[in-house]
Image 1: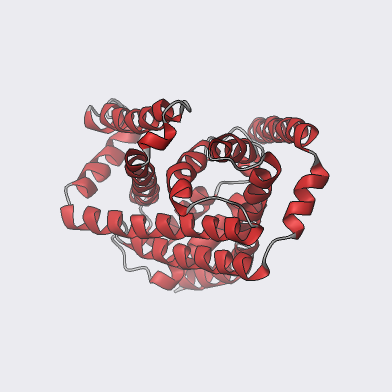
Image 2: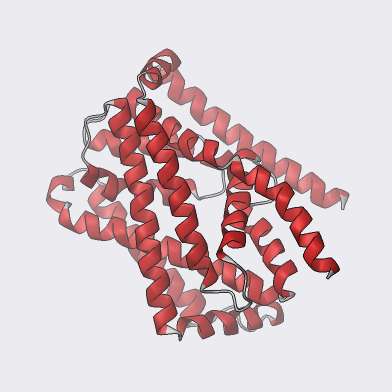
Length: 308
């Protein structure tokens, strides 16, 4: 137990150092005052609209998650779980991940450990697939404007890596020889054979990702950034993918650097890019506080269910 706690603490400290170091060099180069000044010009209507859009996206995500759960769990409960997961991901860095929290509660409802893990994974996997696909399709349409930037190689490489790794891991079933993973693979392939469910979940995922992308664009508009929605369609999927790499606290530092690099390609100044990153992160982090309320309410509801 102590060894596990020690590992978690060490992981948290390493992530904290990564975030702090990256932000230090960013602000040293750009200037913290410039970023704060830019943030002060944020239009509150655009900021609020972006937050509401994020909330709507979370609700649609709850409908998507319902496709992968056999037991009859209400959409309202799954929405509560998504908000709780968002709270843990955004406001409790270094703590148990949001997906792990959702898995725990779904397991308490169903009593099926492998199925719970598979449902959460499928929900996340379909979401990532849709996000990367949107970015790649947008890249194809905007290829001419990206020639010579280096991004014309990076984006398709990311797309290819995702599909190749999917084929290796799931197509070849390289982990099926391990007893603990065998049942997981069975559930995964069972889901993949259900064409209508997969098609519906992909459609909902595309809607979710487009809402998120438009929310980010609202932040850009609110800050007065000179950038097109089409540019956000190309770059945000890549930025989100890079931010999901668990080497910093809630993606802090990685996200800001990615915004500076990619938005810089289309002429956005560094202080504006960092301000967009912070404002966008803040817009959905503020909303995720709702997850704390759901967390306490859901604990009571779960205990009540278990006592019946």
